[in-house]
Image: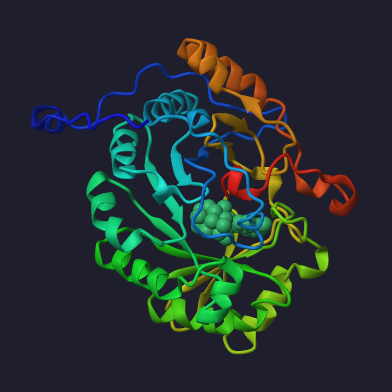
Length: 354
Ligand code: SAM
Ligand code: SF4
């Protein structure tokens, strides 16, 4: 499905980045929010089955392979998005490293004039073997999901006895110079909230930025409940039982409230979509592995780009379709009220791209 490598010539490399061409007016929705970052999901498949993300392994239905965008198609949409003002790409899934030759896609993306950064979020199972090739292809940073430091518990949460391999992946990413290396951790009441300080110490020891994410109602098992959400407030209280946190604020369009430590080592971010949403200056959009454009994690509507893409639409037509869809970006999760009553997800997280 993926195309063979299109080698870049040394002569082309010597020319430096190509000039920006085909720029269009930026994507601005009716609330004035400008899209700057896209999360591109490369597959809904995953070798893990995290209980807050996927249905159980027996119940999951994968998207048919022919429905997934090829690397050429992903690159094409990315180019159109960059022409519309998008500046950063994050590759995700499912598990993005399941796609063979992912480094080839990275190589294609980093050459897009105007695109400033390509990062990836991964469960790290394949990271140790891939870190060097990814860095050489031009990948910037990598965010590894790590929800427990206890081997049994990791297996219970992720459905895979993978902790040693994930830790190796983190070390390989640091050793190979991927930057920044960050850790994402979803805290769930009754599962891992007692590990907040252990995870903080693990990250500080390695000078890694750690982000705790509140559990969102995007799981594949229908088990989300507000009672299971460990709030940013509670996370902060747990960390402050040992450390003095120094506020670093939340940058425009950023998801995390960031905090530093008195000794300057490490940083912790609290991502609080449920208890303190940050939708008013959101600058993110999403592309699913099967070519559906999603304006918001809490949008019920998937906007099909794959059909026009495969029917021969021009870049201009794709751009117009994206613009018309983006204009309908919903206000945000805080306007949905009681999520248990109002929220009907179109898909689980692994099939959207976290
Ligand atoms: N497989 C990769 C990984 O696990 O990092 C990338 C895809 S995963 C869907 C992206 C991020 O979404 C992960 O950090 C994961 O922990 C987070 N995530 C998944 N389901 C979630 C949920 N229901 N609430 C909050 N975060 C979730
Ligand atoms: Fe897979 Fe990532 Fe979802 Fe876990 S969070 S099941 S690793 S896609």
